[in-house]
Image (tube, rainbow, N blue to C red):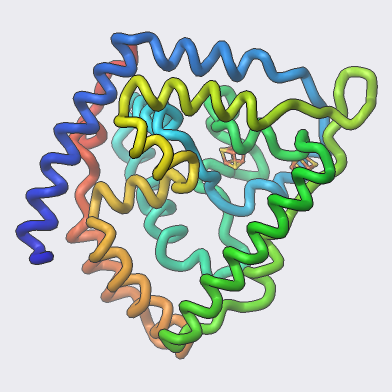
Length: 265
Ligand code: SF4
Ligand code: SF4
């Protein structure tokens, strides 16, 4: 795909994003999402923020809700978060110290609006958690193999980082808290189905994070994939990456709904 084609697809994505955001507001989907979130039990934990080691995968309606939130932020704040998103997008596979773009001083800055994945963390029964860890381990091994073929070695600390689980979440009686994550996820997928064709809902599910979704909208996935390999190779050879990052920033364009201050409804 040429850069012009990539740009023109981006414009239609922009229009789609604005249209879907309007539809989500009109259909009250953010309120529906809040009602699902409100059913979670009150819990406590040690607030160590280890589970915020990366931006979580989100449903499409959660993506729109976060876009709505970002749109109401001051421009410089949006810029900061977007820079963090680019950093995560390009360097998370080689930098063990990366963390979710919304985490600051070990606190979640979007706590009231945090997505399902964050709310579910530590609430799955041990057998589900074991399965999720096995899947994460397999996905990490596959990515490591893929990148190794491109000459990029993922550090062991990065592979371990993605295997975090937690048994320190407690309900009001001090017992391990449990919820039926699959049932809740199905309800949120149902909200996605109001916005997207069913096959897209199934394909997308909650597999992509905000940085991945924003990056795809701002740069196009092909540009990201190409840039990521160049940046990772350079970084692993200890070479400067500043010029390439400048190029990425120049090419990146925030979705139109984020390019000026908007009112949240
Ligand atoms: S859920 Fe667990 S890992 Fe996450 S902040 Fe609480 S204690 Fe830490
Ligand atoms: S959205 Fe908040 S709770 Fe979720 S990973 Fe990011 S900082 Fe942590």
